[in-house]
Length: 192
Image (cartoon, rainbow, N blue to C red):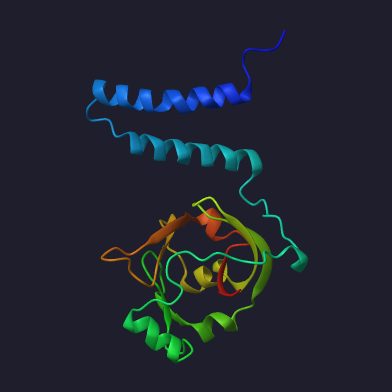
């Protein structure tokens, strides 16, 4: 006899039940914030995954034959901000990466400064949060080299990256923890 429970049936049931549980939970507990629960669940899953596979596991590296013929871009490829236009015209000669916060030696790095560090080139797959992926060749300085130069304080826990151009009145940012920041494949890419 065929099993009543298949993986597809379980996933379908979860997809159908989740909104009902959220709506029902919101009525029973008006102060409950489902989006926070979702984020905390995501953090919990990431932590458990890291324990299973190890935080220092390397991403698969590919060959040039595997490069994606097209690598999609997100956001602006030619921002209209005055600063970006000036930097592009000068070949990014005056561009700076400001590293501050919980560091002993805040510093501003030029592109030439970053290129003076030993570089790493890797061919890896980029998996976008929007659901697409592509294999590209990246060259850059290991983030650990920059962090060593600015000397993180003992209580530093995360590295925050702010996007150079703004979307309306909002500046996009991302953060990573120190395990990911010091991972050997984490680079500040300046070439692709």
